[in-house]
View 1 (cartoon, rainbow, N blue to C red):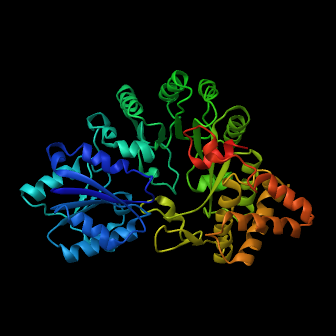
View 2: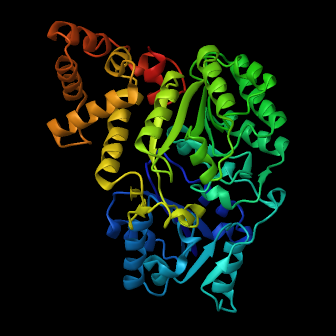
View 3: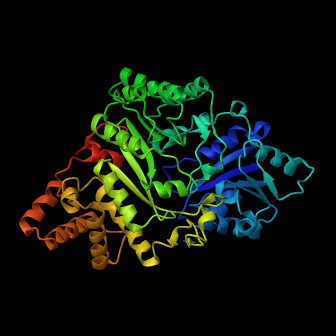
Length: 492
């Protein structure tokens, strides 16, 4: 095999959409190109051995924030044991600030930005000459109608065992400075009927879980309605064969026509990821985020109260100008809307994003190693930021897991952020751990915390037992295509 396209996914259940796009657009080289995916955490030597067993002339790596360190080790090893193999890098992590990266120094070539046009041309030059002179190649942005779509390259095993990532559009018209999409000029849609024909083929092959990677799914309501109707038609035709679709939506744009469509989805069929990030207008202005907070809150409230959509809403701690107090107020405001999950994220300095323009004024200090998490800023010192990091982890274990649905409101009372921060500080002091806390131990710790807050031992155990002690239905008892995490919320 002349060309291997590879990446290290975060989990086995992830299937790289980017690699499949590249393979689909390799032209006459497709027959001598193969995808090999690995999972982070494996042995670098084993990855190298499996790659070299194919006797490739070229290996291309997709490099992302979650795999750059392990990919760098793999590239360094390959260049030592097989220096004749040409290494090409691509992906967001190597598309910006390339000069300072060790992985770039070890590789032969780098493609920044889009790769579907530039990669096959670079491979032709390497294989057939004349040899390329430049190391860094700026990717040509193709017209979406000219790209071959990749969905037929999902294998039967992918369809059975992995999340299928799909996209009806690329890019984003918004300029939020913490996001790489801030560098896009706009959003570009794929031709809708062509896209839906690919979705139909996937469905007929057995696909039932579709995760859309579009940054702004509900930007074009006409297209959104057509795509949602595609899934509603499948549900109506086969109600006992459920379909699950995940969309990332703009929080303050939910017109009546879209609401009517959303209301038609049954439980377990629809999930929305909504990026609030901050409810602080001054912070929003600083990071160029345009958002009508009142409309966003009204829309989330309506979705929770009237629809069956599973709500996954994001907040980011550490943004410039955001104090612990203002973040906590935003957290309380969001919690009062009762989304199923609040994803509490910590600001990261993604390469190329404009957030760095605030570095001096707000004393932003980021970890120099991936994922480049903020360590401190003008308003939040390092120790406090670490408390927020632990809060995020424990919130995921206790609240987002869905396993403490009855207990959580009692824990939080009328001051959700302050009370959970106190719980977070307490549990860390008692365990010195944020990972590998078994569920039975976590339940006992929550019970201890409640008793420490004045609840009787009998009442605390009864409350925990109402959530735990085998009283919840098993996830497998509910027939749905929804991911296991969402199913935990569905059984409440």
